[in-house]
Length: 132
Image (cartoon, rainbow, N blue to C red; front, side, top):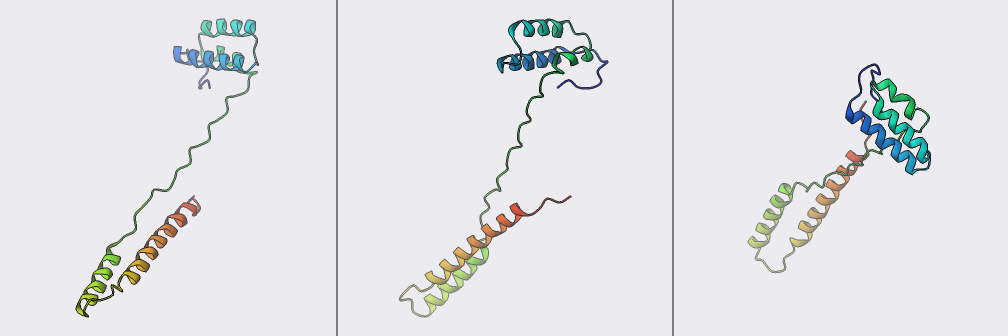
């Protein structure tokens, strides 16, 4: 909470950080009102950072915040090959006389496999170990 070097004059923002920490500890029940008042007087009278150290030395350090978890971005699959094959299948269907639109089945299977393949790729990237 108090940065080094300790023999440097303290700033107002450093004093206020210690005041906020002391008030938080008082709210948690670690300091009573009289002790809080005495420590606050010493905080405002502090000239160098070393003067602030004994005021928080017997109090626990504030808990560190857990790092935010990043979600993998949603990425649409590359539909270019699926579209090319779909156009080819529709052309074959049209050239063979139309009728029942059978290309819907292979086009649907290709689209689903494309989504599934892309989802698996995103999961494998997310679960891969970090490089060192």
